[in-house]
Image (cartoon, rainbow, N blue to C red; front, side):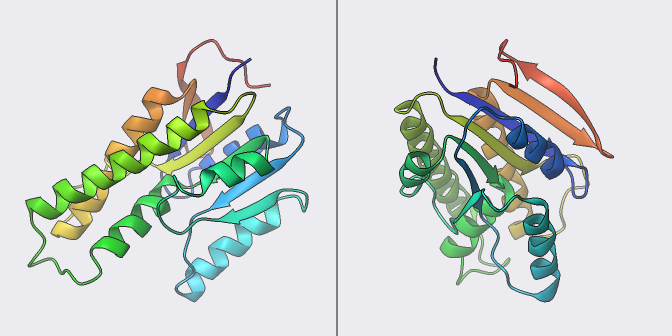
Length: 197
């Protein structure tokens, strides 16, 4: 039968996570897994995480992945039939923070961007290779669309925006369906004829 891969894009408070959760609710997979990528660094982020947790049923198993995912996704796919990966944006942030912990905007250069882009591409390629070795899985990715705003003022923010954009493009190419949420309204951008349950 093959796997079904979905990508839901949107800005902050666009309704993207809620739409992705609806896809998860209606999926045919009996074992549902939620991949959480956010680090809780302050009260505001803790509040956001609590809001997400309150919306999820208790039978959704949560997997925290706070860095590169390729080494951990195999276990998740053994434990769940449908996986909600929320979100690519924080996944990229975690990689950026891990590998640029000792850098600042003044010392950030093109070599850093190239190295991070290569690392991200390799991790995503491994991730999708692992997914391709499974069957009858439903994977729903969520990500922010960061490229529609003004150009960020500092180098670190520009690198981050670019890496998220590249990751979104990579996942969108692999996805069977791609959606965009704006103001709580979601539209389909791409379909390979796969029906969402």
